[in-house]
Image 1 (cartoon, rainbow, N blue to C red):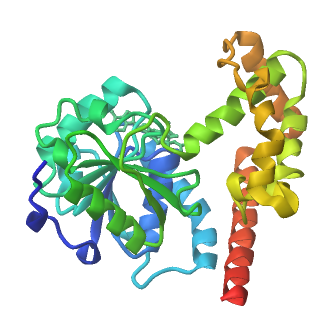
Image 2: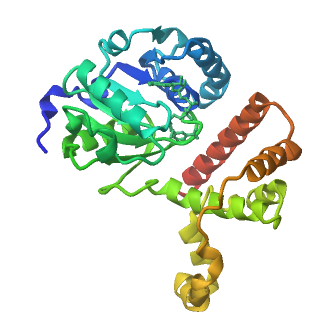
Image 3: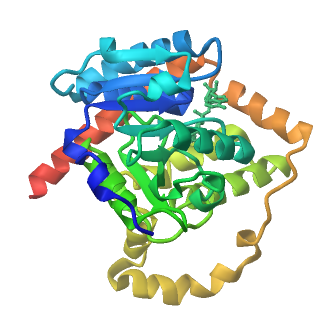
Amino acid sequence: MAHSAETMPAPAEVTTVCCVGVGTIGGGWAAYFLARGFRVRAWDPSAEAEPKLRRLIDAAWPALTELGLDEGASRERLTFHTDLGEALEGAQFVQESAPEVLELKQELLANLDAAAAPGVVIGSSTSGYSMTEMALNAERPERFVVGHPFNPPYLIPLVEVVGGERTSAAAVRWASGFYERIGKSVITMDREIPGFIANRLQEALWREALHMVDNGEATVEQIDRSITEGPGLRWPFQGPMLTFHLAGGEGGMAHMLDHFGPSLKSPWTRLDAPELTEKLRDDVVEGCAAEDARAVRELVAERDRGIIALRRMIEGRRCESS
Ligand SMILES: NC(=O)c1ccc[n+]([C@@H]2O[C@H](COP(=O)([O-])OP(=O)(O)OC[C@H]3O[C@@H](n4cnc5c(N)ncnc54)[C@H](O)[C@@H]3O)[C@@H](O)[C@H]2O)c1
């Protein structure tokens, strides 16, 4: 579909972004944009949103400072608006991070389309909906893309970018270029698949974890430790494919597939998602408390310190080998 690329500002010229919906993810995006030196205009219909947003940004700021702030980075460049139209004024990019409810997103995206300046690209943080279905009621669907981040967006580099059937190729290119310019690691997908890439992989793990808790086969703590003390240690450096390549020894992936290929059809890979009963819900919630009873903010701080240390180590290894 044609999209007036000439009405889009060059990614390098963007100085002002609008964050719509500023909970865990939208707030994380806002913190990241501020650290990159942007002016951030925020809108969220909740009465508690602004103080929560400011608390989230304050909590994220030490980590962002440690990783390095860009010129002009300041928490004072955040403005919170109670009117959506006002929040969008002057915004050259919009990041939508409202709740994952399809009808809500459809209505919100139509409203954003009506109020945002023409040509401005609008990215959605959705975890799994397709842009084709979300932009159903938008008059200019060509400017809508998925820009799927990972929690916390201010520390995890990956963003998956994909357009809907009516998104212009120019908007997809623009969004990928913009996210790359602000330091994100971008995967641009050329087709919509439910859950994109990373969530499809995460969902498979999550589904199996819930089955094991549901059947009393493993505790929440055992499941977590099986990853953090096991395969998870390899994943920051090599993804699941290279990990299995090395699991094939000198024969690499070819040996791995020839050797283990037949077991791929074993039944453990064929489970549907379990019923989320009250008991399963409570078992998982209580399991988390039993594993680590510290407050969420302490766990967030520990996670952030760990991610920073890992990113430093990975960057150091890359420098050494180049
Ligand atoms: N939490 C994650 O790990 C994660 C990761 C990647 C993507 N996402 C996606 O990010 C989006 C937001 O998720 P979250 O975890 O931040 O949720 P959240 O509940 O923390 O935040 C949602 C925010 O949206 C606001 N809101 C409610 N109605 C709204 C409306 N009509 N318009 C705009 N804002 C509205 C709420 O007040 C709240 O502040 C979802 O699409 C989700 O799938 C979440």
